[in-house]
Image (cartoon, rainbow, N blue to C red; front, side, top):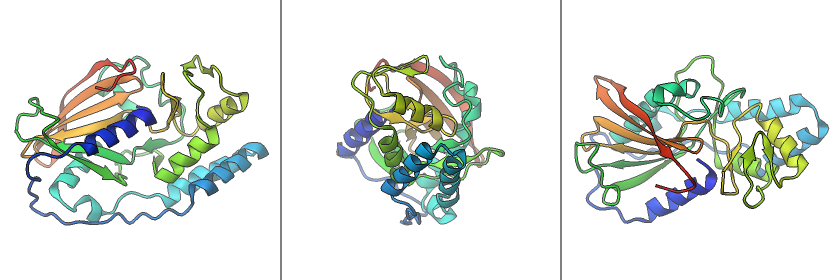
Length: 279
């Protein structure tokens, strides 16, 4: 899902007045995230530009290595600040296996959207809701209470994977580095129509490190590794979860159920094609 859709969802959903009381938490406590940016977006952009024009691969390598070193997972205290936040991390960890997206359904581009990248880049915001019913399929999204978890950096358990966590300053720096796509630009056979050759070269350079895609109709870049979680819906007792997600321009839906201490996928499928619309 591209940046326009992400921003639109956040603005619309958070603008809706929540209905009903907030869910009670057995261990509710507010824990602030400990992350403080080491580098500004301007500094990162300058480093990217310098490395690009110097044509020295080690300089680009150093930027990504510094990113991985300085942006680390959330603390145990942050993750366990209440039952709902803990459940979000647990569900995401069970769901998010970007090297094996076939377990979630059948996709138009298979895993080519993520292939040949040195790093997996994880989204840093999760939209979630606690439903008023224990039946996860009976969803009243308008009346449900919506919340946004920011600074989301889950400690993933997969071995042998280089993980990066998205932050506002890194996202801004890469947009500045690439520039905004020209109007009605589309990605077609690896070539961009109406974009300068320099942008194309920068795009190809970054693709070796993280996924870089452009919206089919919108003019913004998408950097996070698919699948991208659009929202997580929990039933009232937080024993079932429904994840609405995207893989490129396609939508998917996964239902998980808590069994003991683990969350297990009980259903997952490709639901529809985006076709430029927001559901």
